[in-house]
Image 1: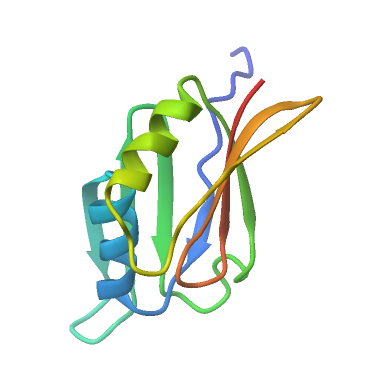
Image 2: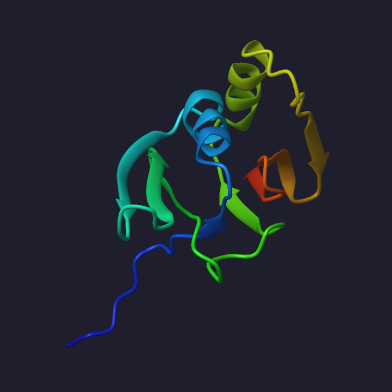
Length: 120
């Protein structure tokens, strides 16, 4: 068998599921693909996606570290910026940064995780 890799899926630590849903589903426009819970009171683990962007969000202790940065190579970063700016989020007003690497939009979720959308 030949070794083959698929794109990695980052696991981001979240604490408050309502805040996670508001950020990832309502604000960022992701879809909830599935959700898992161990036992009736256990922590939740879920997958959200938008196009090729796939993220796992976990309440499990030891999954991910708050403050993680995820780099997402993006086409249409200016369009994403315009879409998010139009939503008039009460706590987020992201800007675009331009440097030799490209144009970057950085979002910080309610748990301190950074999503860096960069268009080279």
